[in-house]
Image 1 (tube, one colour):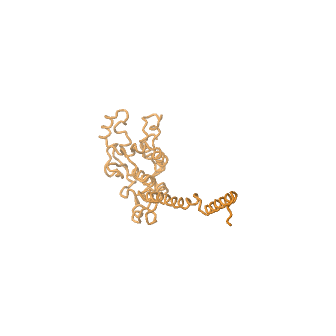
Image 2: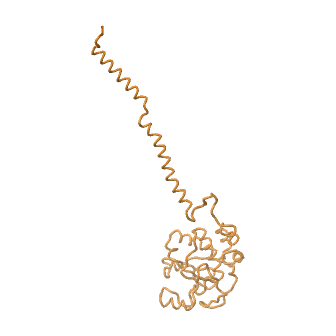
Image 3: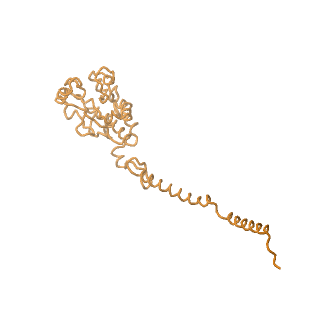
Length: 264
């Protein structure tokens, strides 16, 4: 004889069925755990995607310290032979630069190295202002610019240190000026130009810097701080409130200025 299930038995059976169903669900992997491996993969891909452009960009341009093969980028052995001071420009050039109290033997040693191997700083000028001969001048790194030999050697030594720091040469507006060019400049600039025959440009002892040097705070600070080590300075009269025209671009070779009775 079959027994009809009671309502309580039915409810119990349903609860057991539901409990068993929920139990099976507990064996499934929670959603946050299922995402964990995916997030790890995505994170790895993201890092790889970011790292590859950065590492590739680091190899571009002269600023990269190492080449693709992992070897350091720098001057070749031939560069070091032709210009042995490139690796330690400051200490070597400070030692070789002419001092204000006289031309030192180290200056002549710098002639035997670089940067002006054919320029003799011992040459004595006898010509008048604005009439220096080719023998009394040395060409600089910038085409068309020249200075008295000792001034040229000192400035070129400074330029080597500048290049080692900023990766380029100093930019000059002018250096030595003939008497004719002084007359022309006086006619165009009036009181802002020295009387022809009196300018230290005419002695090959002065330079004017480009605005890219005076307009860059880091560069101009470097020039002012290091220029004195090589005998070059922006004279007091050319500074703001110094009693003369404000010319931050104008620098003079102090040893030569003293020789000619000029003011620093």
